[in-house]
Amino acid sequence: MLTQIKNPDYPIFFGDAAEALEGFLKDQYFSKLFILVDDNTGVHCLPRMAALPALRNAEVIHIPSGELHKNIQTCQEIWSALIRYQADRKALLINLGGGVIGDMGGFAASTFKRGIRFLQIPTTLLSQVDASVGGKLGIDFMGVKNSIGVFQNPETVIIDPAFLQTLPAREIRSGFAEMLKHSLIRDKAQWDILTRVHPETPEAWREQIAASVAIKQAIVAEDPLEKGIRKALNFGHTLGHALESYFLESPQPLLHGEAIAAGMVLETLLSEKLGLLSAAARDSIFVEIARLYPLPAVPTSAYPVLLDYMYQDKKNEQQRINCSLLDGLGSIKIDCTPDEDLIRAALDQYNQLISLV
Ligand SMILES: NC(=O)c1ccc[n+]([C@@H]2O[C@H](COP(=O)([O-])OP(=O)(O)OC[C@H]3O[C@@H](n4cnc5c(N)ncnc54)[C@H](O)[C@@H]3O)[C@@H](O)[C@H]2O)c1
Ligand SMILES: [Zn+2]
Image (tube, rainbow, N blue to C red; front, side, top):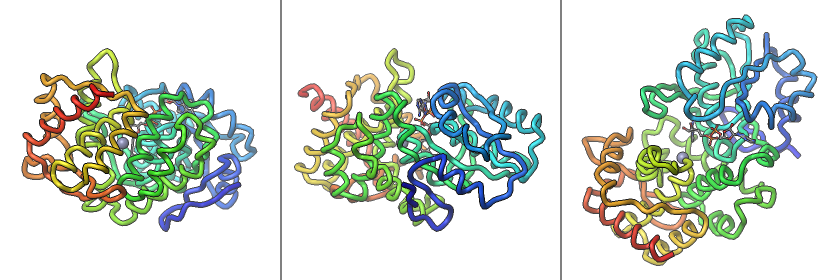
């Protein structure tokens, strides 16, 4: 069954992707259709769509998979393919893949001939509950993630949990961290549900995917350009991004959601230290996240490196590290500015806690 998630700006469909796409294409004119896929979505996701009569003459643009390829060179490949197939401004680009495809395909479409229309069919849990909604598009440049990009909405987003059947369990767990984040910042009841399910079996909690998207959508709708409350979505990300960058160089890099899980623990500890959160809430959040994620120890030699990364965060103003912290389970306070000593103390406490599990 196809349902729609409330959104005034563009429709977000939830359910069978082929059915949703067919319905969408039926009512519109496009001079040509393009489908952007990577190595994995070309194999696992495209066949689910390829039988659609409306896609019979669509051109498929293949790019290599992975964050390493989310760059200007790959954009050039996409633009070259569009030129080769004589795309004009009435063409449509269908981004079929995870957050890399969505961010980069959306960016390539928004800049091609000053912008052609595009739609997002996210195929990873992370891109379904997070990347595909909110209009942020872009690529990595000179080693800095998402440093070149634009805000632009897609024509529509189609979220089909069936794509998750081929997604590796580790990737599902990574996306699940963003769902936990949405519940922690906005919806205690959803936190209670999510901490009782098994992340490996998304069929059992498919409706929670729609609920999680609805939280993100509602926050973005309140503050599309991230001047205020949208910063709530950064919970776990100030420390999480720093950990992600730090462990990128290690033999065991973390997936984004794994880094965010550790970041959420650390920012929960900061929330309690600042007197925003009760010790009981802090403990229950730690127990649940530690049960679901392998939390890496952080050597003290890494603290200055992590602080350096945190100072580079786009959200900072006047050289103060800016975090969104919890002031309750299901409630967020933006623009908190913990000082370095408090962050070091949270890292110490984190290391101590994880050594006990
Ligand atoms: N725009 C935003 O608001 C926003 C928000 C969060 C993350 N992001 C971006 O999203 C990206 C991460 O997204 P991601 O985790 O989806 O990464 P990804 O797109 O690299 O996908 C992860 C892996 O899964 C594979 N894959 C995708 N769908 C599959 C399927 N159904 N079956 C099997 N394999 C499949 C991909 O080929 C890739 O190897 C980052 O670049 C991040 O910056 C953007
Ligand atoms: Zn994230």
